[in-house]
Length: 227
Image 1 (cartoon, helix red, strand yellow):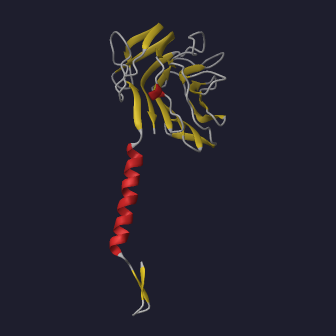
Image 2 (cartoon, one colour):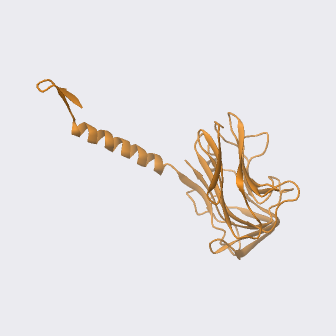
Image 3 (cartoon, one colour):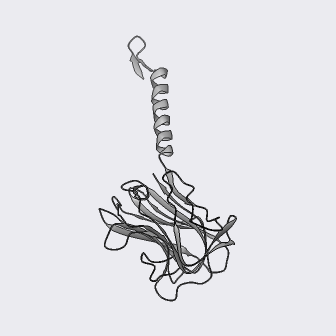
């Protein structure tokens, strides 16, 4: 707006306002477009590697131990885990750095852990920077992020019950929060984790070395989104 000296009133400069609105809209669109699915594993394969349908590079995975393809999935087919795991080689695209990261999966456990926990997906291990998604003995979702600033975790209030169909789980890190989401129910903690980068592989279904914390059940539609 500008002051009109002749009338003593303020007059709106519509052209300038439209320009400001356009700039804000473009900035919002650019921010929304910045989120990238760096890995999307549909788990539809009948043989071979776990194929990545996300953005290049292809972060494909190798199956180990007791992982069975072709189980009934949340969408099409999924993988059934007993004492098995999948490894995806380390790649810079899987390191969120200081950007937001969302790790999502659909899970249908056949039981809950009686010791330790179920590792759904993780990249890295203590004491390094890492992110991990676990199901606890209580059935709660546990999301932990260890960054350059500090380590923080969120635990869901909603519990995952075995043999009750597929549950959508998400672990989210933003610049100021860590969130655990089960079927849309969200629990968050306000915290600044900092940047997360490591040289570890991504592991699905067991602890990093495939030694323990084996998930038991079907897993489907796993993704990692950064930005």
